[in-house]
Length: 207
Ligand code: SAH
Ligand code: MG
Image 1 (cartoon, protein in one colour):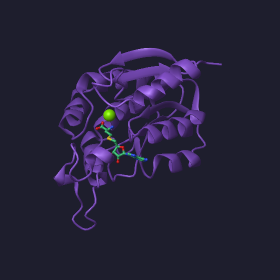
Image 2 (cartoon, rainbow, N blue to C red):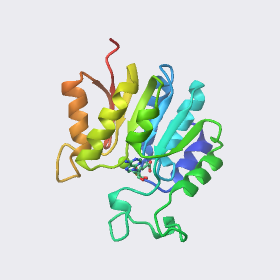
Image 3 (tube, helix red, strand yellow):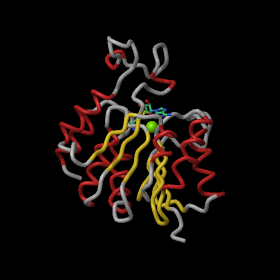
């Protein structure tokens, strides 16, 4: 991946370690031959730089969806709260300005389509056959399942499903992403193509 883009990804606030980001980038390169890339959970754009770089290389786009009000763990008093991301006007978390700065610095404004919306609402408007769905939004069990069920009908045969924060051991982290990972593999026949840190990349069967 381009050194300049890598530097922008590293500088952005967020939760995508470099090695996992590079796995995402490689998966995005393959998925881009199938169709557009989609991400749930833009936050400040860290993972969007890796996927946006892949979309640019493949001549496609990345659609990144977030309501920009933060997940449960980003709210005041919670473990991942960042006071710098609170909008003084609303008093709410607002990560959209940071996302736009990251995309500007990366030169990816023309490749990344930022959608400010709830994930399931955005899914109901999607008419495309996607090459990749990357799930990294809310990690409550109900939200993780809702995201999976809402977006899977839009993933093309042979397309990639990436899931972040997959921990098989409850002592390492919440089990909701692991739950949808198992659903994809065991119920829906996805095959695993890459695993780095807590990132898992699966491929939907071609037929
Ligand atoms: N991918 C990011 C991290 C995402 S953090 C990175 O690389 O750093 C999770 C994000 O999911 C938060 O920004 C939160 O606002 C968003 N989110 C949580 N629930 C959501 C929902 N139901 N719809 C849309 N976005 C949601
Ligand atoms: Mg994550």
